[in-house]
Image (tube, rainbow, N blue to C red; front, side):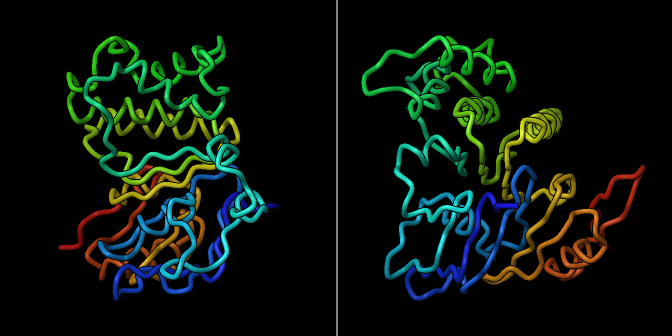
Length: 258
């Protein structure tokens, strides 16, 4: 099966530090892959590179493929339709209405200066309702709390309706009930055939994924099914065994090791 995203000999250097050290990775289609690891492991850098946000240069080298095609051969417009992105601490104008921010996700599907179509309106409405932000559609971003802003930015990413969705720390500022809502939304995306890749610090939530990429010091030290005991032991090891993964009511959970 064609990989959704693939990296071959990917290296990223920031200043004097090599953040990614010639790693190879293949993300399968239609599954949720979560990237975990300690601070400074290179998780966010890897996600940005996979998203094409780090253009190849003297600081970035290797081969990147989306759905079997070299990334360099895909036009910017086609990229924007195929992959949606939700980054860490993303900013948006506080003066913009929630509706208008979500509508930005439809820009890749619109002709230059064209008015939003009926389908655009329908997709934005569905995205805002899915993230429980519909009631705020006429409010400005500046009137919202941090968690509410995060849900609006997620709605913008959902409105793209892309085949691949990448999210870097999407649970930032979300309280536990809305983290559960996010998890349900991910499963809805998977049911639609969307490939989801996320970076999470919340190991308990990451253990709900299909597959886990475990990183340390710019390298992938393990990539396997979340339910696999080998994967779980790799997660424990990369955090210096300060956590332990156990099964409670049929679900793997991460507990502190005191």
